[in-house]
Image 1 (cartoon, rainbow, N blue to C red):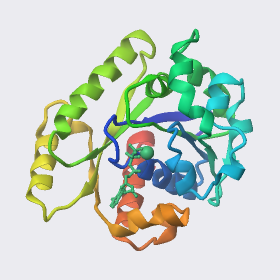
Image 2: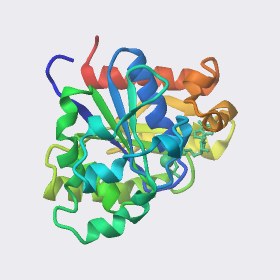
Image 3: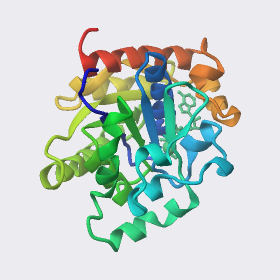
Length: 263
Ligand SMILES: Nc1ncnc2c1ncn2[C@@H]1O[C@H](COP(=O)(O)OP(=O)(O)OP(=O)(O)O)[C@@H](O)[C@H]1O
Ligand SMILES: [Mg+2]
């Protein structure tokens, strides 16, 4: 990726438990495996990305809070994960107060963008793992990013959630970040034996606006994926042969073809 700076993607969906964190850490693992230096920023006070990568509280001296409030750069706040080429800016306890703190400061929407300016010299990809809300942390991510990656669980009301997210993306684009565009929509936790799941998938793919954004790769529901975080590993590392791992590896290939064109 000659001289193009870091490609910053916000991994966003205001609905909880749809696979944002799983997607961020497995995509980052696959990107790092292809030699792309990758950073995940854990923007969720729950800290699931940090925990799921085996980065315990003892290794979280600086975190996403320090990027936004203490002038720390991504290189300073990042810690190495067990995967070569994949670093993490962890979540720390202070991040729990960040929504309120942001509300009270100037440049409340652009703090993260400012902090990530220095990322281009260090990383090829930066993935921002957002909390399940459209609050100021997510708005900071959408303001800092060039692309929005939306994990979507194929379930009842999936399209309604997308419409709400789209409004926020449009508001951020209009006011703060004119270059913001969608990377794509990744269908997650799919169960093709479940009729509702297949119907929702068909509805989303048929949708005039969202359909073209949907990746061909679908992530199946797979128990190995849900086991991996308690072992502190991305599922791709925990059990590479699992159906969920194979799907995330295929997804990373599709993601890269969309991002960088045919290699
Ligand atoms: N394909 C899958 N198959 C089975 N379980 C999965 C799959 N993807 C994610 N999970 C599990 O579902 C739960 C929610 O996933 P994840 O944490 O990635 O979602 P999230 O959108 O980041 O959630 P939150 O909104 O709370 O941050 C986790 O326990 C995760 O291990
Ligand atoms: Mg999460």
